Every structure is written in C-alpha cells, then in structure tokens.
Amino acid sequence: ASADVLIAYYTMTGTTQSLAQIVARGAGDVEGVNVSLKPIEAVTMDDLREAEGVILGSPTYYANMAGPMKTFIDSIGLEHDSVFMGGKIGGAFATGGGSGGGKEHVIVSLLLAMINTGMMVAGPAYGDGANCFALPGAAATDPGTPDEFTETEVEDARRLGRRIGEIALTLAD
Image 1 (cartoon, rainbow, N blue to C red):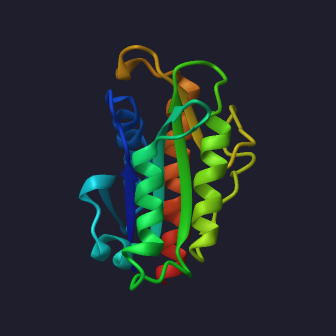
Image 2: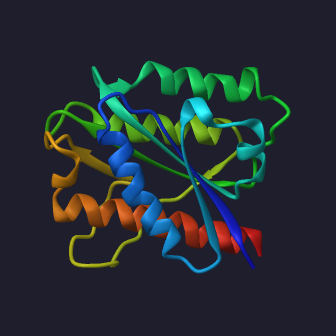
C-alpha cells in the first residue's frame, strides 16, 4: 500500500521552509509514503484531492498564522470547493521569532481549520522518545539560520511527519 502526504507551507525568510523539509523527512521515513513538499502558492486542487495526509506549516505573525496561509485555507472552501477533505489526516507546525509569541495558537488554528474542512487531526504521540511533547504539532523558534534548530525541535518535526505518514498509510489501506 502507498499513501500521499502533502506538506504545504508559507515562508518569507526560509525558516518555515527549513522546518517543512524536516517534517518531510519524517514522513518520508515511513515506507510506502510519497511526500509532496510545496509552498502554498504552488498547491493545486489535485494535490489536495490526492493526499491522504496534509501537514500545514506557517510562521507566527502577531500570535496568528501568516495572512497568505489564511488566504490559502479560505480558498479550500471558496475556490477549491470541489475538493472533499473529509477522511484525510492533518497535522500542523509553526515557526516564530521568540520562545512564546503564539506558535501554539497557530498550530491549533491550523488544526481547527482542518477540522472545519472535514479532516481528522492527529494528536501527539506519547511515549515516543525521551523528549515527548504534549503539543499536537511541531514548533520551532527562528534560530537566525535555519540549520540551527534545537535537537528537540528537529525530533518533534520528524515525529510529526512520521505520525501523519503512518496514519495516512493506514487510511489509504
């Protein structure tokens, strides 16, 4: 069996794209999962239609998702209304400039948007490694250079990708 996982992100400085690449590696670690990594402006209706799993990523601006991500989400219901998102599994990640600043709010907002399109969302995987987390997604603070995420941030992002990949594969089966 195989499953398609779409990782769609918005980035301005490259930090969210760098985290998206780590999430993609995690999803790609699952045998049978085909990963498509795209900036939101390149996502098509077919990408949404064909994916069993969708992971959205956004930077945090003033404690909220970036405007272009919100516009993309709105387009799923307004422009892409021929795409039924029900039965798909979703996950989310966020980046931000500080240790707080609303990254958790961005993740929850992305997950709520997915629920409102009929999708299911994955909660955290407890007991999966030493740095277990309770947030149903991955968050990273902008380190100034994208290759300097902490070990925990990298592992959380990979774990998110793996979890969505595993669930998408189960759904495709």
